[in-house]
Image 1 (cartoon, one colour):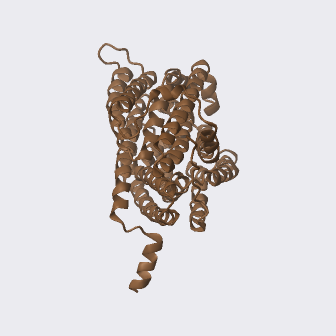
Image 2 (cartoon, rainbow, N blue to C red):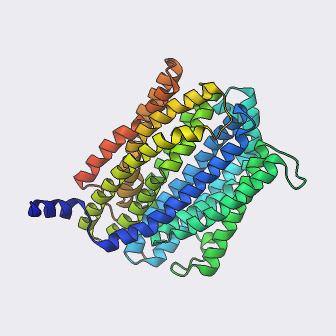
Image 3 (cartoon, rainbow, N blue to C red):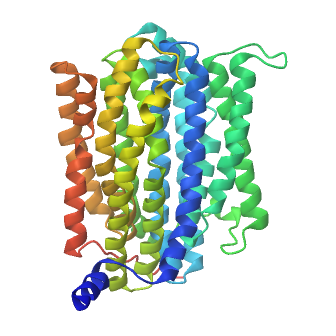
Length: 463
């Protein structure tokens, strides 16, 4: 019996205490950072919620558009994390700096493009998500200010995410805490009109977020320039063109991760478009469910981030056997977190709905969608740890990109449209249809892990 137990442990479970210590140094700050970020989102929703369903829906749908950029930044971060973690694991610090240069160059360009487009045509953007005039009008007010948020937020988001590749997860936590207090304070001032400032409603919420993001990027800049001692990054690298070798590795291992996360953003927007055409009550319910869902599943992002960094560094060092064992260990952790997350959604869901000033019909829709979300969370945990952490850290980004395209755009989105719009089923069934890719990918990616074909090392760059 002991021999069988030892054999199982050797294959599926890491027993080295230093491994778990390393995991926790990344996981805990990421979890706390996610809690703070979701706290900001919840406070935004609660504060604008006093203005009614149209305002909640307008801000929610405007933020769904903004999530296109956020997910793009996450994709840029993921591309940088894959390469930086592996190069850090192999001891090539110079290559890590080159990765930072390229990722920041990309996000600055993307931020400028989003800013210009959003400022020029906010109404046209909102009309994609809703056909209700009051929702479009409210959302356009929010987007007009949001146009100035893309650049500072994009830079800070990429910096705090990619720097995790060298084991530094504290920067993101510290800047998020600062951002939280700045955001809540200026939301209170601008939304409700304090200190002689006129009450601005939804526009005030956007201004509060802008203040928070500016402070956030300034804090990142000060830290990177004055206090960061491991990487010793130089801003002068931003004006240097990337080498051909770096571009080749970016295209091979990094670009598929960027595309995959941007596809996820497009899918999230498509989800909002489908739900947006089911009425403002459904949009408001979905916004409330999403905030709680993310609050209750913050540990998922922590495990995913830790898996990507730890496995990336292990693969970079050349120890593929250890990476395989670590992959199984993170899978076991994700299963446990999925169970706990689902239970939390069930336990906290009803209480959280009482925080919002919404109609009884919206309350009923929210409760039903909340119950369905509790089931979905289990599969979300597994597929997230696999796709955003384990397999991505191993460099299997091309396979993951194909899986995202296949299951999101050939299954979830068409099925969600059929159930929600064509058949007109209840919103909770539409939510399940739009999340069915979580279930399928959870099984599909575990099979990929078991195959052992997911490990791809980054090639050494010439000096």
